[in-house]
Image (cartoon, rainbow, N blue to C red; front, side, top):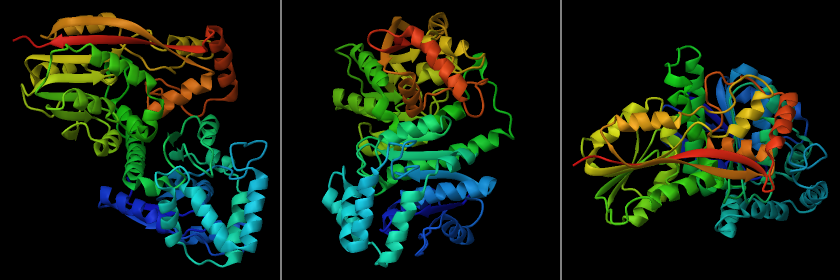
Length: 515
């Protein structure tokens, strides 16, 4: 990533809420220069005046980010700068802070008007009320509110009012659509100021940008978990830089048209913050795989291969409390999320096709819904054979052809492009496992069907999981409204009483290394 990142604060509370995040970002990359730019102290709510002042002080070719009002202003400035802005990220920032007919997922107008009137009458009391709303949903809301207020500057009432008037008038939808650089937008599930539904509405508006919802978090989630937020931002910036590089360097050829693992790692890193909120399939499949392990099997050392957010690392740790656990993932963003939650003894970055482990060191390799992203599955099996001790077990769950066939068939009626990730045929899994030197205790495929009220709910879940379309041949640019309507009409043909089905063909395997 380029070496300059600028953060813009929200209304009324100054730069102090952003300081822990800036420190965390700086700690992730010693070459990165992180600066917090205060908002203009203007007694005017003219947007161009605000942008002119910010434009004159913020360096060119920097990453722009902001919290709440700061994110809205960063969006407008990014659109103004175009390709002179490296990328944009916003935190708890609604395209429109006040609801209107075209954007209902926002604060009601009458609530905001009362807030504005209160600020004119008693600015300090209004600021205190605002800090409580920012902290709503936090584990310790009053403590967080005091922290927010403790660093607030003593801005003059006209300055505070002009900031609120700016909040009332801003609508950044056009700016977000106009800016063609990489974008990340993070929302909070318990936000007292920005409804969580705004995340889904923004995904509909911008289907090709990265959007995450942190379920159990307040409007001030950047103070609740600055290191987690910093990890998500770093992963986003690194993946965007990686994408820029791939335009110059030809990507490695992947057999069978499978996705480039660099894109897989980047996509799942960006999804770390939102992954657990929508990972029902992963939970169900992984739990089924865990139940398939022999009851009397107790490994001395286990490896969670493709650990993601660490849910099954923690489950393995609970089942085998005396064992030594290693959690491994190719996505740094996932590891940053998983590490503080524990479960494993070590959390390491690594590739399933080239494991960073010595020969014959594991009794169990557990991998749930990860190896389908590996282009060279022969190498995965070879590495598992190498790392396992004699008598050790490689238990994996994967996906095969037939997965999301409803979505694939619906897109085929719209255009001929690749919209659904490709997976191996089950027969290929059988052939490769038979030739691996591992003995199959069991190898079978089972359908797992989830139901959704509408197509948007399904595509939102895939996006939040980081499992959206990564294949070569996928369509570039924005998906037009006519094509989306065509997809919805085609998918409706599959509707059942429970909703729109999405079928996942799951491969369950229990492989043993011979004694």
